[in-house]
Image (cartoon, rainbow, N blue to C red; front, side, top):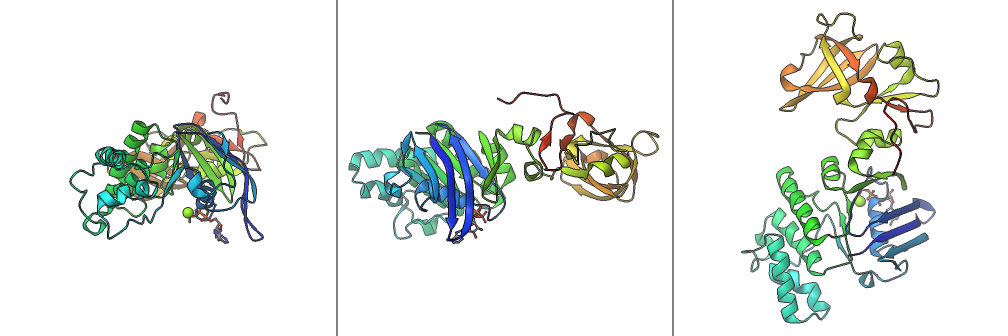
Length: 353
Ligand SMILES: Nc1ncnc2c1ncn2[C@@H]1O[C@H](COP(=O)(O)OP(=O)(O)OP(=O)(O)O)[C@@H](O)[C@H]1O
Ligand SMILES: [Mg+2]
């Protein structure tokens, strides 16, 4: 396996800039998840790394070797797309072996690698079937198997699980993590899916309009988002973001510095108390909607014209129309300035690594 170094990468389509100035180092054996809204340039970035797009600016190196202008086949990377194309007339075994045959790998070596990949991905018993005789998840595993047998320097995945239903996605996510651990493989993985990003990633890179917003471990992006965009993008439900002046006026926060324009607070840091039980503590709020999610519930309230979402244990959820008192955990407030960049204050300061 190998490192992938993306330096000052820029990509224009005609006169339209798609990627600005992207620099990203993916470590050997790292699983880096790339997330961002539709159209922000995730696929373009991956395609640049794969060699399917020419670079407008910047360089890409794999394992320390500059591949900026190399042909895709010479980069030794395996790409798995959302719409994986298996050869319909070939069996699973033949599909797995196809790329190796093309590369003139010796037959006994092909057999060995196919058996190994098949065992890893649970394809035993399916080798003689054609793609039409497989379920969606099985087909997806064959597509991954085709990438695995190649022993590439790195894997590039572009939303490979988005065609699958929730249960299969869950299973495949676990398969993928196993695969990553077994192969200690360098992987760049694009997804829209929050859960996928948080659970799979060693580090997450958040892309917006062709620019990187923040790169870091999932916990860091969740706990210390560098700006309002990342704060809103990472985490479900979306972080509550309040105008600082209005939050202060509503009695939700104490005095905040003049540089603070936005206050963010995650749903689990919003505490609801019975209005009667804690008289005097926190402003009174009206419960509008309650979403029951099984063991927890999301409670949407309004307080002083502001909307807030609280995460509570299902059995303790109030009812729509109830009045409750709201308190925010001061130590869990995220503060942002007029430029939407994070301000350090409320949370204990931890130096960046
Ligand atoms: N060949 C092209 N010519 C012109 N514009 C293009 C071309 N390919 C992509 N784009 C534009 O570049 C931007 C980034 O596209 P890209 O496919 O990388 O987005 P994405 O982040 O993968 O989105 P999604 O999550 O919807 O897959 C989009 O605005 C898209 O319209
Ligand atoms: Mg895409």
